[in-house]
Figure 1 (cartoon, rainbow, N blue to C red):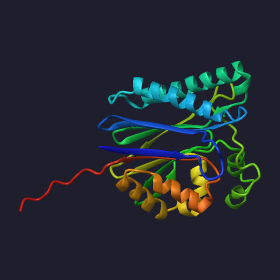
Figure 2: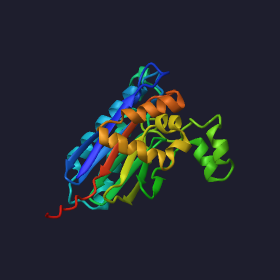
Figure 3: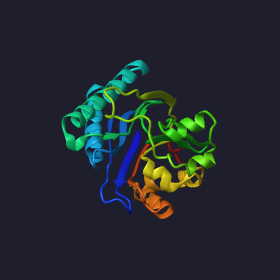
Figure 4: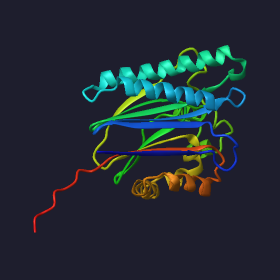
Length: 259
């Protein structure tokens, strides 16, 4: 069985929320989750994120099947990202009010013991279990490029003046290249999809084990991510929109012994 829940909040500083998320369980072991973080377009980033989220979720719900293998799922997810990009780009090109708008995109599809990830921008997916926490996505940012070539350290990246500059987004160019990866997803494992407003506000120390796992387990028990949003507000001041979406493949129930 799959447990999935999510939530979003404008935070404590910004007047509008440009984040969007959606999820759905399609069968006992098949589900998807999507998080988008809009930007640009004279404050119309929420339009881009809503358009992208709606397009991708409709495509995933329509085309995903439990019997699909990796290549078929990849085709569905990459086609959905490309279609969302074309939709947002056309809207931005045809309406001066929307000029320059775009959005990040992360989508996760869980099918049995595997999870498939597509991503554009700097929203992230983390894989968490008792053994540790691992970021499954690669940020498309100026700072990440500098880190990759060794020009700056992680400590320098945290305070870099261009740390919020992304190098790839949905809807900014006629085409976009989305990353795609596949990973094992065992019973008891948790996926966290989140916008940069969540992981930046929570901070690297609190994103590490075991602090994050404890908060995720609390969320699952409560059936709500309100405690995660509250953590981001408390630790980081809620300076950005905050979105978190959790997916857990529940551990198999052990049969009870007869008395």
